[in-house]
Length: 127
Length: 217
Image 1 (cartoon, each protein chain N blue to C red):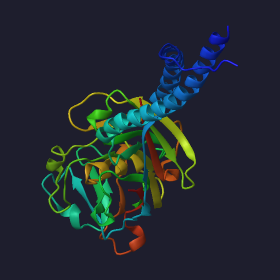
Image 2: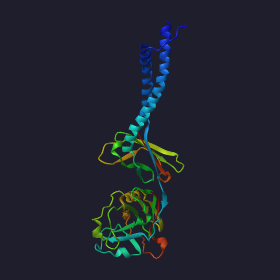
Image 3: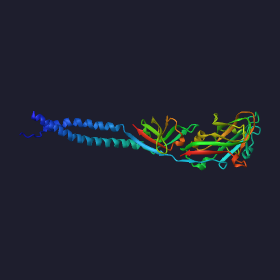
Image 4: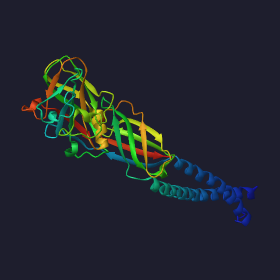
């Protein structure tokens, strides 16, 4: 019984030790994942720019995000229209398709947003 | 008291138990990262105005009765007529190159103003022109070679003299993206009178076509 207790005690001690290792491993994995992500991100990173179309009322009908790298294919591209205070006026997203070279990705569905109030685009790409 | 000793068996047992726990912890951490945001970026737009006057404007009118005439290019008024066999169409455009708006920019708001000098009970419709023309060469016969939209951008009534405005934001936005604004054909789509609007050559500045333009780039 005493031996069992000691073994258990050692196991608990070891567990703490490995939790620490696991945390480090997790950090390592995290870094590794980010590193791997960075590799993906670097292929998917660009100074994205966009242009928007308006209807006769001057409201945004669609946003075309230009030269999206092919490495971003199948990821979700979200675009937020912001005013001068960087408050969201509307957000919409779509999945980046496959294409040769840089893609022009069209995003629609922002609701009624006056182009006059639009002063910035915020982009995000998620898996 | 018996002293506890670490034997190879005990150490191996401890490693097996604890590694199972820690692998679970590490896996959960990785999963959490997997759904994180990969990339974020922003683009700030520059706003401006670039109002257009006769300085950057060009206009003419073409005459069915004189199908090779370019006289409309120097006229002080632009005639618009729906009368059969003597129809007249007016054309107005502005050169936006001085605005330095890139093709990735766009119009936030654009409003065309014309001044009716000779009134008549006509509805004047504006049709977007997307191919090049010049007031010095455009004739009635040349109109068939232009690319002109079939849907009117807007209309105004010419039943009274004075300024009339038409919102042309979409056309100007499209033109900025295309790199050139080739303006509009003005045609009477109802009525039977011959009317006239001030041209860029008009002696009174207020009578000339103009356009307010707010843009982003």
